[in-house]
Structures are given as C-alpha cells and as structure tokens.
Image (cartoon, rainbow, N blue to C red):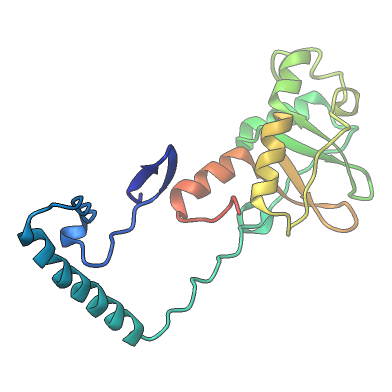
Amino acid sequence: MPVIMAVNGVMENYRPSFGSAGGKLPRKRRAQGGSESEEEEQPQAVDAILLAAQHAYQQPPQLPPQKKSSALAQDLMSGSVTTLSPEALLTDAWTLMNKKGFRHVPIVSDQGCLVGIISDRDLLRFSRGPDDGIAASQRIGQIMQTNVLTATPTTEIAEIARVMLDERVHALPIVDGAHHPIGILTSSDILRSLVSRAPLEVWT
C-alpha cells in the first residue's frame, strides 16, 4: 500500500522529491534575514535537483503498464452443470444437493433450455428433508424460481458481483446463445478466486 499524504484535506500518493534526503520533504526556505549557512546550501540543492533530472532524462522511456484484462465468467465458473427437470420431485433435488454438495440447481426444459432454478432455501420452505412426505409428492416446477438472472461466458466478474450484491443472489447460471446452461458461478467461486488467484483484476 503506498504512503498517503493529505494535502488540504485531499489524499494523494506521496512521491519523494528530487534532492530530498532519504525521501523526506524538502525544508521550507527561511524568510529574508535567514542565516548565511542556509543560503549557501541552496545552490547545492539546486545542483542535486539538476543532476537527478539529467539522470532521469538519460534513462530509456518506460512504457505505461499494460492494463490487465478483467476476469470473465468463463474463467471462474463451474463448467460441469447438473440440471433437473421441472417434473422431478423435491426428493430428487434434496438427494442431488446432499450428494454433490450443491446449493443451487438449474432447471431445464426437455430441449435443455433454462426455465428456472431451485436452491436449498427453496426446498426448506416447502419440506424438511428428502424423507418428508411433501418432498416425495411435490414437483420442482411448482416451487422453482422462474425469474432467473443469468450471464454469458464473457460477462465480466465485476458485473456479476455487482448484480449478486444488488439482487442478493448467490449463484448465476452461465448460458450460451440458445439459453442452454453451460456453467454456474457462485459467490463462493468469486471469493475463492480473490484468495487463491490474487492479484486478480475483477473490479475494472
């Protein structure tokens, strides 16, 4: 983290000045009537500044750093998607989530198009578990969420994170041009990437 300097209440990065010893800020010049010793030091300070400037101009020009491309959904999403049909029972969703450790399952039509999503919270609102009598008789299509936020493989992670935060959702199916789910991205995937793949530019 760079050193921060407050200038009239405005924060900015501190940059050492040419000719300043050890990176300290140069001392203010005394008002008229200062000692001769200080006045004799001024030419030396000017020479140091000129020498530093000359050295800087002799250095080869440095290109500005290349901006890293933002991470995309395809970089972090889980590519293997397990789906269920609207005709499946809640018991099927319970069994799948318990076996795979999922918290969200996309629901697709017979043509493979995304038509909904179901979460563990949805299941808990209607049944207590896979052995519940309700779970064994009620179909997913009756309780699934049909308004599903989705993203494409090239959607930036920053945008997905903003949507998750604004809409308070924790998973977005990733779909192709035909609206077939080809992946799923969760808030845990994003948090995990920030820890294991830093520095990852996801907010640009």
